[in-house]
Image 1 (tube, rainbow, N blue to C red):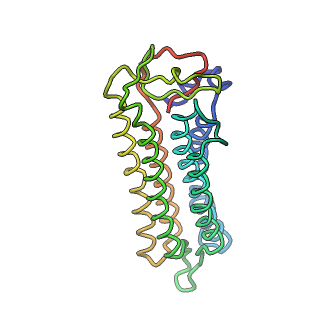
Image 2: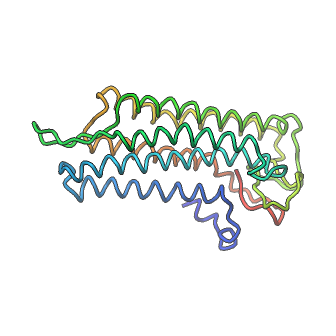
Image 3: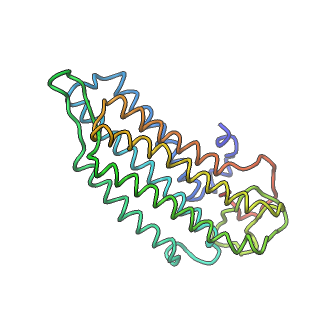
Length: 268
C-alpha cells in the first residue's frame, strides 16, 4: 500500500537495483503465500506427488526470499560507499557477496539434494522437512550473516555519526544516487540524532527478522526434521511474511517530503 503510493511513473523509470530487490521480495513473498495456499487447499497434499512438490516449494521460495533480504542488506551497506566505488571495485561488497554465495548457497544446494518428503504408510499424512544438520546450518548461517551485514552497515555509518554531516534539505534516510552524484549529495536528516536512531532501528530489525527463523527451524529440528506439510508451509509463510514486514519497516521513512538532487533515486 504505502510502498506503491510512493512510486510515481518517474520513480519506476529511475528505479535502482536496491529498489528492485525490495519489490522483488514483495512479489516473491506473495507468490510463496499463493503457492502454499494452493498446495494446502487446492491439491491433495497427502498425495505423494503433491507432498514432494510441497517440500521443494518451501525450500525454493524460502531460500530465494532469504537471498533477497541478504542482498538488500549488502546493497544498503554499499550505498554508503557508492560515491567512491563501483560495485566491482568495492572490496567489502565483493567479500560479503562471496560469503553469501558460498555459505548460504551451499546450504541451499544441500537442502535441494536432501529434502524430506514422505507420506506415512500408517496415517497417510504427508510430512516434509529438512535433516536436522541442514536446519541447524540455516539457523546458524542466517544469524551470522544478518548480524555481520548489519554490523558492517553500522561500521560504515560511524564516520557519518561522528561528523553529523548535514546538507541542504532533510530526509528520513540515506539517499541512493546515480553514479554521477558527488559525496555531498548524500542527504542526512537535520536531526543530529537521526543516525543513532537508524543504528538502533537496524539492530532491532536484525534481531526481529531472525526470531521466526530460529523458532521455525528450531521446532522442525525438535520434530526430528519432519512435520506435517501444512504446519511446515504455514511456519515458512509466516517466517517470510514477517521478514518482509520488518524490511518494509526498515526502508519506509517518514512521510515528510524532502528536496533532493536530481540524481537521488531512493532511500535506504
